[in-house]
Length: 292
Image (cartoon, rainbow, N blue to C red; front, side):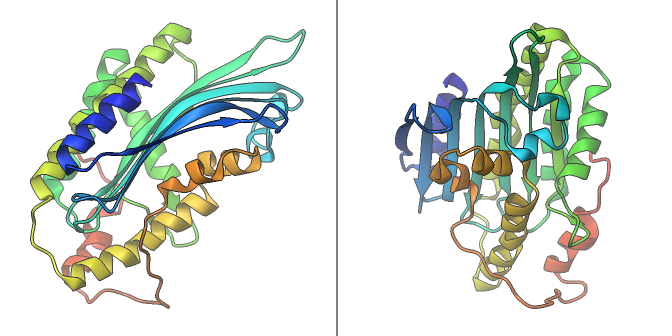
C-alpha cells in the first residue's frame, strides 16, 4: 500500500488532479474473499485515465487459468497480494505504461506451500522515441542488476514474448521486463528483487511523461492513438493472465477492468501510409530489439 501511495502522489503532482479512492471488500460468502483499494483518475490534465490498484484476496479454489499451466495447484486454497497499474495519457506522444508486482501462495493440508513472486513493467508508445525506449529499459536493467546479472536479459525476453498479440503477429509495445513463478532467490531475496522493480517504476516513467506531455498534437495523432489502444484491449481481454485470473476467480470487475483505455477505435484491415510516423511504430519500434 505504501508503493501505491507513492505512485499516486507522484502522478497527482504531475497531473494536477486528485485520484479518487475506492476501498472495497469482498463479502465472506463469495468464492473470493479479501479487500483492496482502487485509486482512479479519469479525464485528468495529463492522464485521460489512470488506475493504481492494491488487492489482498484469498480463495478456496484456483481458477482454470491457474491450474491449466500448474496442475499441482489443483485442490489448493490460495492467497494473493499485489499492486497493478495502467496509465493512459491524453497526449499521443506520451506512452501508455503498465506495471505490476504481486505475491502468490497456494496451500493444502499435509503439503508444502507453493509460493512465488511475479510482475514487471512495460511501455506502449503510439509515436516511438528511441531515447524514451532506452531510458525505460536502462532503468529496468539497473533495478535488477543488484539481484543478478542474468535477470534483465531473461526478464526482457520474457516480456517480449509475453506481451505479444499472436493473432496479430505483433508486439503490444516496446516491452520492458516481465517475470512470474519466481522463487529462485528464496523468499526474502525474491521479495527484495520484486520490490526493486516496484520502486523503479517512477524513475522509469515520470521523465518520459514530463518530456512528452506538452508535445503539440492534433486529430490525426489522437485518431491513431485510439486505433492502437484497440491492441491494448485485445491483449488484456484475450491473453493477460492477471485479467483472466481475476475474472475467473470471482474478482472485483470494476477494479480488474480499470486498465481499459477510455476511448478506443477499431478499423477493418487498416494500414498506415508507408513512411509515415504511424508506420514507423510498426517497422522501427515494435519488433523486439536490445534497447540498452
